[in-house]
Length: 102
Image 1 (cartoon, rainbow, N blue to C red):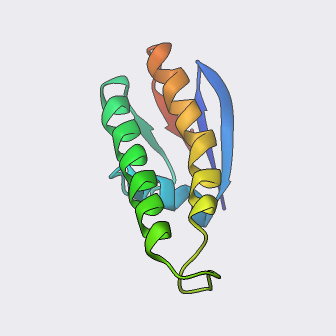
Image 2: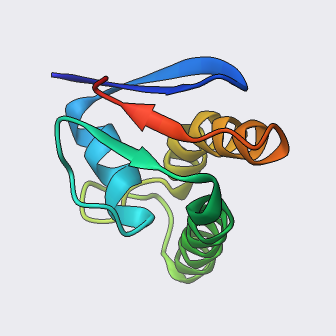
């Protein structure tokens, strides 16, 4: 399954199921086949992602090198979050909802 996050303010962001569900979980949304992040919810969603990135960075500073399967590379969270974050930012600027599965 793929998640296709869409907004009239930006290009869609496509994620595999696990990554899409991770993004939804990070912003406090239940993973569902369809949904919406309203304009009013966008600031909180972006704040949640920012806090998750900061927490990931802090954990990275406490981890011994090299990282292993139990301690995934925090840079990978940045790689997964940033396209979604840019979509949310553009949607907030354009005052447009973000939808998926529609």
